[in-house]
Image 1 (cartoon, protein in one colour):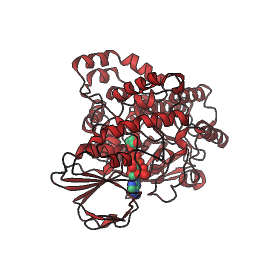
Image 2: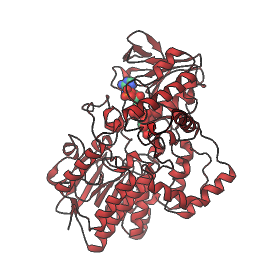
Image 3: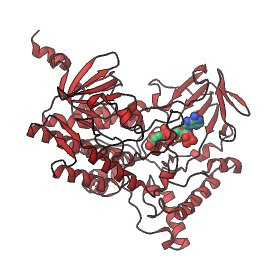
Image 4: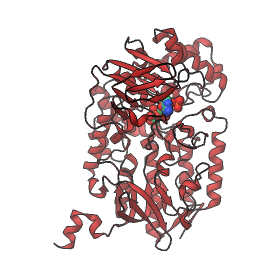
Length: 548
Ligand code: NA7
């Protein structure tokens, strides 16, 4: 068979597995990066653990998984035809629809031929002499790329609880991130859910009416607010499609690239009546407006924050019939919006069902998972199924699970041992030719994520275009630029209420050794300022980097 035909069947064979760029991950970021680098005419290989595209939306198939961003603000913006052809069915689309969308994108742009599925990267090492990365899969297969782009997701390193006996349970058990592809039957089952973050809330409200008995093990309650999801009408569909340019323009200007923008007023600049009316309006409106479009000081002034937290606490008391359960559901250790706000649909009402029980694991800690259920300090309960909605080793965890070695063999894990050190949240000194899309210290993890992904990818693509045009085979952030950016990140976070609270956003995870200390992982200056800084670096010929 002629070589050309071999290449058509398997590009890895002819190309000797050497590419201009290797991308790790075929989620939203990896797919878009592939599309853009192909436009540059580069040879690209995407390595993906799963058997399909979609990343977050491929893995998180748990019941109730859906957007918290308005669907039409979440899709890719790069193709007008795609925008006009795709119809979102609901204002906040469910996981299956989003996965369908991403598969549609992969097919439409013929992406799969450059993606290797079922390929988990275990290590990547920079070869200084060859100025390229050597990327190794589980099982030992190797790929080579001049450039290495990580698109491995901020919430992809899922964590099971460090509770004795997790392996001993004989019933069904699932982490929400590794939900089975086959349907799961809940009818008549005694089900435990551990964890009440954004994921746990979606699971609980969805399965509560389906199960025989539901016990929720809550360690920390969260401030949840109504999603108010509904179908998109035909008239709305037309308006959405006609309004894309204006909408994307707005999204470029808001701090988190949502359609919600901070209210310029201060909480105490209005009368009590005006305040209540405004907050009632926010509570009755869909999506994250209540978090993102609240008074400007709600997330920074402790008094304003406490007052709004009281407002939401009142709502919880009104909605939960049993006063003792309501009190358990009201957070006491953190204010509204200082952790990710779960968006709910009937979550609080689920606790009014006679077969749903809430266990406060701070009052009665889980001691062990047994063969038949869960033992707390005061009781042993039998279950048919345990659902772990216990979250992720966020933002840096996926990096820790791959052995990245830069110049002189240094490990990224060691370089970041005291917290990430980056330049623009996109690269790290000592790790040449490597770009970290949605990495720590960039704006994307406090963002309507595809919007910031597109910014990250477009910037990375610009750098690679410059490299191609100028014959550059090596780029690297300088240690000074890295130190300055890392300081800037700390300064921006100073005074934010969220930095005083344990959560995945501050890098705390009780289930991972060494993750009990808060770290600053996110850029807090807002997406527009972040984009401006990145653009300035590019416009000045990549200041803070050495290109050769
Ligand atoms: P989160 O928000 O990190 O939530 C994890 C939940 O699991 C949270 O309630 C934890 O309690 C709880 N948890 C974790 N470990 C334990 C143990 N050992 N015992 C009891 N409870 C435990 O993850 P999600 O998946 O809900 O959401 C992640 C993001 O995905 C979300 O913000 C969206 O952006 C999408 P804790 O609060 O730590 O006390």
